[in-house]
Image (tube, rainbow, N blue to C red):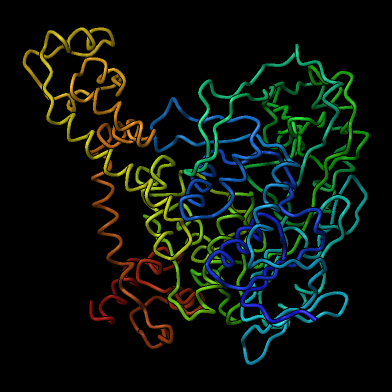
Length: 623
C-alpha cells in the first residue's frame, strides 16, 4: 500500500518538520509519520522562538535553507532583539508567535513540498536487517520500507504526565504516549534514560488586570529572523511582566507534600535553566519574588501563557497561588500546568551526522537526544535530514565545526560530552561566539547551504551583495579622511578625546559610543556610498560597523579557530584499538574506546582524556 521511501521521519515536531523538509528539498522521497496530523509543528510549551543563543541557531537554520526562520516570521506577533546593551556577539533575536498560525505555516510549507508524503499513525517498531535500518512498522500493522529513518519522538516515548498526585500516560496533554520504540532500541543494545520537562498553566486573558503589570512592547523598529524576503512586523502585541510574592510562595508550599517533584514520584532530571516555580522557591529561598511573563498565544485568541510559572502541583494549588499575583486576582484558568517524564537516548551513541553508531542509516534528532527547546530540536532535525538524504545518495557526511556554527557546538557537545540533564544552548557554550553572531549567519552558512543544494540561488545572490557591499563601505571608510574641526564636535558630544590631526574615518569607529550613523553624518563620500548600497541590501551598514568596530577581536578569534581546526583535520581510524596504546591512561582508553572520536580535536574535548593522552595519539598518528 505504501511505497518505499528514501527517508522516513517519525514525529512532526520542530525536529521532524525540519528533517522532512530538508531531505525532501534535496531530492529524497520522504514520508512524515505523525500520530496526529492536526498537531504538526505544535508549540508544546511557550509560543515564542529564539532568545539568547537560540536566536542565533534559528538564523543559522535559515541561512542553511531550513524553514523555522521563515515560519517564525510569518507567525510572529512581536519581535525583540535581546541584549542590545551588550556587544553584538550577545545580540539575540526573539519572536512572540501566534501558536495556531505557526503550526499552520509549517504544515503549508511541508504540503508545498512535492517530495513529502504524510501518514497518521503511531510508529511502534523498527525494521532492521544486518545492522541496517530498512523501515518502520506502525500500530495498525503497516510496514513502511525505507533506506533511512530519522526518529524525532519528542516527549512521547513512554511519556508520563504528572499533575499533583495524579499520573497518566501521554506525550502531551490530551495526546497518548508512544510505545514500542524504546523497547525495540534497548533490545538492539542502546542505552536509555529518563528526563523531565514541564509547562505552566494557560489562562483567560480577559480575566487579567494589565494595569497592575509592566508592559513589555516589541522593538520600535522590529527586525526579523529570516534572511529571505519575509516582512518585518508593522504592528505588534505587547507582553507583560508581573511578580510572585511571599504570599504566592506560601500558598504554593501548602501543596509541596503533594508535589511529584518532592514526594519521589518524579525520579528523572529536569532542565536546570527552566526550573518549575516550586523548584525556584525551594532552591532560591532567599528571594521573595520571581518574574512572571504574561505572553499572548496569538493575534486573535484570549489564551495567555504564564511564562515562569511552570509547575506540576495539584491544579487547585496552582489556581489559588496564581490569584495572589498582581493582575491575576480574578484569573480564570483554562488548563493547569504539568510535568512530563519521557525516554531519551544518551547522544554519545551518535556520530557527528546524528546517525547512530549501532544501526546504520538510523538517525536521532531533538529531545530523544536529551536536548530541550524548539530551536535545539529544529537544528538537529535539519542536520539529520540533510545527512539521511546524503547517506542514501552515497554522498559525503555534512558536519559543521564548532567554529562554523552554534549548531556545530551543540552537536559536538552532545556526542562528545553527552548530557545528564536537558541540554539547552547558551552563548557561553561557544568558544568562538564573536565569530558566530546572529548578524553574520548568512555570510557564514548560506554558501555552505547553497553548495549542498539547500539554500536557494536568490539567498546566495543576497549574500554576495551583502559581502561585496560591506567590503566597499569598509574600504571607503578606511580611505576617507576627517579633519579635527569636523570630528571633534562629534567626539566631544560623546565624551571622547579630541584629535589634533586628520585621521581616517574608520579609526573613529573603534571608540566607545561612536556609531556608524555618527560617522556617516560627518562623512561625504562614505555617506553617499552607504545610501546607494543600502538600496541593494539593508544590512550592509550594520555589518560594516560590526566588522570594523570589533576587527581586532574577530581577527584574534579567527587565528585561534584556525589553530584548533588543525586538530579537527587529524582523523582517527574508526577501527583503532586504544587498548594497545600503552602510554594512554586507563580512563583515556576507556573513554576513547567508548566514544570513538572522529578527530584529534574531538578526542581532546572528551572528559577524562588528558592532554598527554592527546599527545600520545598525535605521535601514534605520525603528527
